[in-house]
Image (cartoon, rainbow, N blue to C red; front, side, top):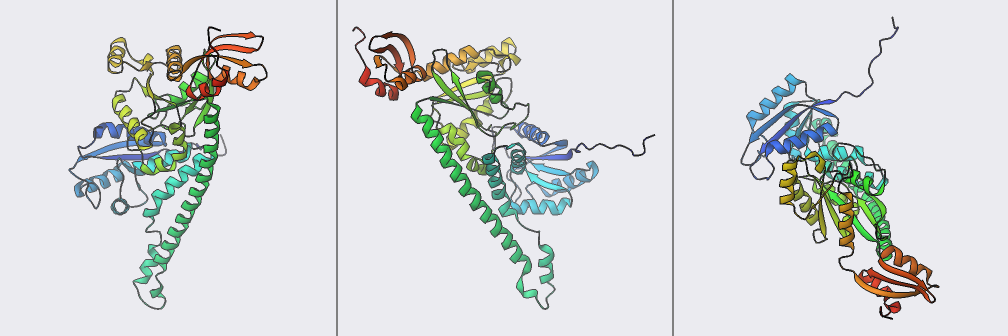
Length: 432
């Protein structure tokens, strides 16, 4: 018999109750939105034990849900031994405080925004990603700093010597000042990193390399697609927001032209505004792209709503005018009838399976077409002493024909406007 009883060191998942209010104003039904909230909760390590809903014309100002529902929630929390209650919509600081008082400690009351911020905090790996998440978290916490010094405020009410200094209020103001100072520091650091990213982006722009950005709803398969196309080796897992930090990889098309592909953070409905603001330097990679590949999970029954959510964020960050191609991923999970129906709705989309490799040649051909859409045909004679220019011809142009003659490289190419301008002094009559 063992002297000591072994015990598990694995973390015990928190028991969560989800609460949603159906206001009848969203394209997403309350049930669909709560199903996504359940996936978010599971991604963050929670076990969902109950889902509650209420139909209201408008949220109750004091507690978001009605008085009867609050009492019902308190009963469920006690009977199910819940650790956390997660609301599907953002709570005001006063609503959160009132609900915490009603439910009682140590049960936590959080909302969808806090849950997403917590997931981002776990998954951010790079220095910039962690700074962006910390900034968003502090912006969320700042208006919610309260109650931490209520014992000192209570001392004020008793009167007597020293009661006129307002210790509790002073400490709360100190905390707020410290948080504001940290927010300012984070913003300065992120601005510095954004300038550095801008220099890198400008270098890519000056190089003339065609830039492609992968965007899409979270868990649509963007990272898997990047791995399939470039062998990037990016972390892939079947969970929401598995990757947050942008990854850029080079890819050479069959025609010999080199492009870059960037995987970006996944989007979601009700994406907190503070996250979009915090991740603006990362999302700048999307704004700087020449082509956006909007990756969609073809097997998801909510794919149309997810496409709308992604396009809404693209519009919010000023990237809605960039040329966009829809890529319906995971098409191998659809049967023939469903696939035919989706093709009818999205006739111009590319249908692929990043996991199996199906449709990859067609996707690359479409990318090559888009990259050459504004190109012009020209014949140039590049002298041998212009070695760098020869290299640029092979990397940035589609070479139709080439031969090495006495005076240099004679090539017929398709070049974009910037490259055509560079090659203009070396243009020759094709007939000659």
